[in-house]
Image (cartoon, rainbow over all chains, first blue to last red; front, side, top):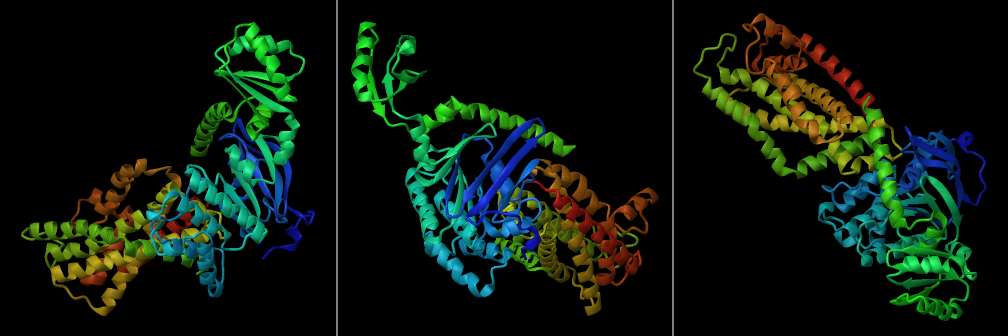
Length: 344
Length: 249
């Protein structure tokens, strides 16, 4: 039973309040002093490369990991002092599969229902209802080992909802799924949010996923929260439009555009050069002129509104792929140290 | 028994009943031991093995079945760790102790069923019919062996990262426990050094207790067997739950 004394002050419209949360694994700071609040009924997206600290944050919020410093309130319960109440009030879908493959879909659900003390009288009805919601009712008596990746994910989401949590955590919900299945899952997630009013926290390193699903996005990188806002506001922060010029002479163009007055920023990538400008349509002729005058070959020019990818690039200085290469290496080293520590 | 413990016990049983090939597959080894050793050595007159060698080793072979099945059941936690299912149980609002106990009872139950299967076969092959009281005594010892060694399996699994070290456990833990238990040779006429070692093997008391139940006589007092094995089982459950509490996923 939730202990009233352990209920800490929290505004009624807040589902989660994170205060200076930090997690260190020996020398590696996986999560570095982050604070934010999640409103009730919101889809909150954590965007960042693999190894940025998203899963670690989620694990702490789900009380699977003890924070090094700081704390958080989930549905009013402290993740440090009132772990069982936190656990009862959340649903968790992990990044890695956590189903028993030797049991059927129904049995996996039933196991969960029993562990969370869902009374026998309503358990069966609710399981069938949820299996229907994720369109697995016809396969309810099949062993999970015969399921595809998408079906397993759907089953895990249904299972996470069985004990009627107020907040659902989804850690990389569509990792490794094909585009069609991803779209379907996004629909389910949206529907859960609008129809059941469920607060959903998800982590992802897919830009489109964060953009499509989240009401607000927190960009997290190297354990730090860089910025938090709605996808719209994030994109507006960059402002203007982005011109991508595909050219073999990117470095030459870059040096030419260095003293351009109307460019907000410019950056060279492999085989292309991007410029952020206002009124891109009017600037293109000038750009082409400069290129012609200096005998720079242009293969193509594309104008687009800033995407989350550009936002990410703007705030972290790297694309998410560039970022991932470094972050994973850090994580590996951290795990190794963590492993050594544990064996002692 | 808490409902969480029951739930985990139920899962173990469901998985066990479903794995027909494992049930019959793991009957093979004890059956081989029984038939090959039992009949192969029956012509030798081994002092202390009254009633023939085949009959003599029946309690030990049944005990072996329970021992192996229960250690494997405990070690299965490693698979749950690797396949991720353990996370599902660890994030539930239930205590680690109730999970550990569910796993222990589940493992002990499957080991007991497996032991009963081999017991029926062995009784038919050996042509022995113990008294009802003797059967009950044997069952009590089977339960204790099951509880003790499932817990030991859980304790080992809590410390192991993956199945890499399994061969090591097999060769340096499970086999010595079995071979040094006096399951295959009479303790009465064993060399002194070996005898001393067998007294340190908790399994000895399980085998001797079962021998008393099934054959009606043993070289160690059955009450002492019960107290030693019972104490060992309690200790293993304690150690298992302490180590399981520290498990990380």
